[in-house]
Length: 510
Image (cartoon, rainbow, N blue to C red; front, side):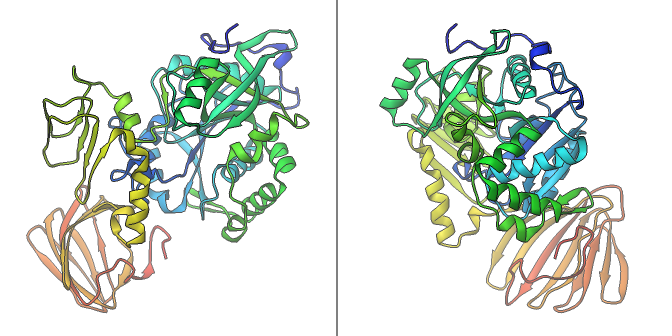
């Protein structure tokens, strides 16, 4: 059988793969929703990263991932509730997007980023605590899969090996010599006790770093290498044994963070100090790279996957995924191509006209424009680093900033003033707060506002306004059933978002 053979049919449960009779296994989707997506700037920002953006359609990448295991038939029931691990800063947007999908979830919050190995360890601890054990299908929130039937067939094959105590990774069948991905070298067929390889599975040999072009071409020609997908399947108990064996410091710190964690409404907060003391490491480095030489805990298995997968890691990757015109152009939003070839253009509002362009990426947002050669899109992250070094806000936030109560758009700013368009969701309220350095004028343009100003509480209707003097405690609420839209004019000596003293907040912000 060729190393590039793939799973094509659902795999039924087999005796040689059966779980111990004392444990009733089920498949537990685990979504890792961290990461910043700097190569997809200016759409992806630190406070609103790529997994929360509709880069390929109306759904965000996170929302698409939540639906990826629907109708999966792998011989075990699929848990009704997702386990999602995300950064604390993204909790409200993540929770809102999950709510829109209708998927129940346990949303675990990382107080600080520590890469994927600690995140998965925390998820495995949660699975073990709730279900004794479970077969975790671990999916990054920022990937795309075009062919769900082929994806399900590969997952079904991987589940059988994972149930037997192996750690499975999906190896993407390479379609080109790609220098932007890591690779996995595979060994011989991975057989069941019956001697049959399920789903074309191979033994894991080793992980290799992103190669230069000539080496990548040799990898593809050899048919012994797959792209590293970052998708894993294993029992929660198997992962916990492996991480304790190979990297006990990660296991112990994550266990302490989980044991000291606490429920907070819809969230589970890992204990900050314990998690901050956890070493930062990826699943690949912490465990997977060790499995090729040390199988005392588990064997590494690679199941090949050919399902139109992409890690959506750069603008060039998005160009490759989306439908193109006869000249290989991709346009999203208000875009005109005239004599252009192999160009990607994305507009968030303003018209982009591409005349005679070739192999270019053009991305327009309210506050930034990217123009790059497609061969250099991996270097966009260097631009983000420079913006951060210059303390530019464009690396962190969009002009439109999402909040748990709605959003605001910084329409205009100048010396001693700032104008915002604020939209408050029905029934939502901002925190009870005050400012040391600015006063605010609120003008209602749509809906009805309930305003707290010092000891006063009063209604402000459309075309009416309220003035909030500097240093006065205040709150804005939407008591209605339609969105409240106001124009806020700030004036004062300092207008930064950190000039907020909160006295009470529905969402637990400080």
